[in-house]
Length: 135
Image (cartoon, rainbow, N blue to C red; front, side, top):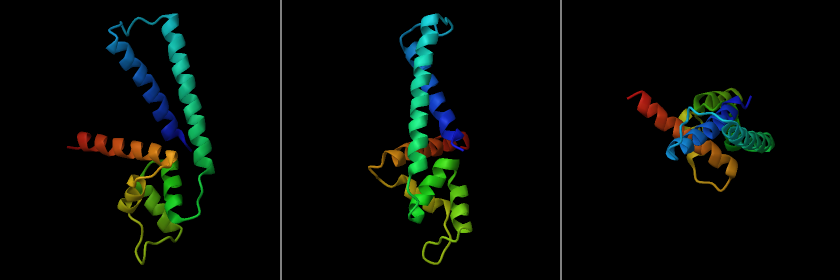
């Protein structure tokens, strides 16, 4: 269910490690026991972050449609799927159906909620990636 974010956390952890090695000027092809131990520690930290994310996501309230949209986005990571699911459940904005832009607006709104900050970061990075790839 949460695989999208789990894989993302692990990849970010590994990529940041490789970036540090390359910035230090060390040979990234040389893989020693010390490097393996560092990678293991980085991955343990990533796993801890994943577990924390899942706990927060599972306990996130679903009292209003906006909160449901945030939680559904955490599950699937796609605003179109979230809008379709809210429409299937009968939620409306005024007299109209939900659109992907409505979901994006909810995710992009400023908030002090740490869970929403994680989702917003992923959302903006995905949009930036799509603009680069599809230009």
